[in-house]
Image 1 (spheres, rainbow, N blue to C red):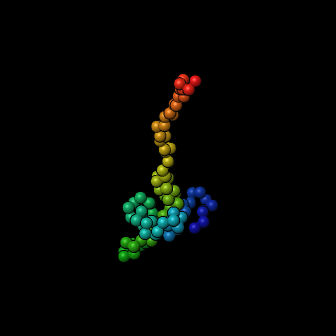
Image 2: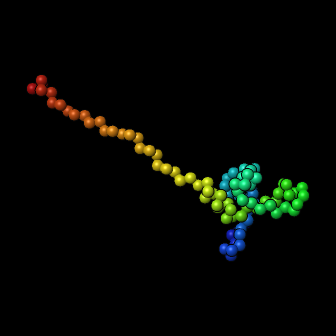
Length: 95
């Protein structure tokens, strides 16, 4: 779905489009929708099809979901490296 020219208009994605964008399965997207982690709108009329759903995910909702799941890596702790100091003592017996 193309981005709208008007920033006030919300762009909606199908679960298939969300799955393709995130490189996950559609069932993973539906699972996120059912759990409430990924905001979505069910456009199906009431009745049997309402259970199955006719879902659309708002682009802003997807972006909010991704930003809430973004992990900033922390630098790995530096090993406790201590330099070994090797002292060279002249051999006085060799003289």
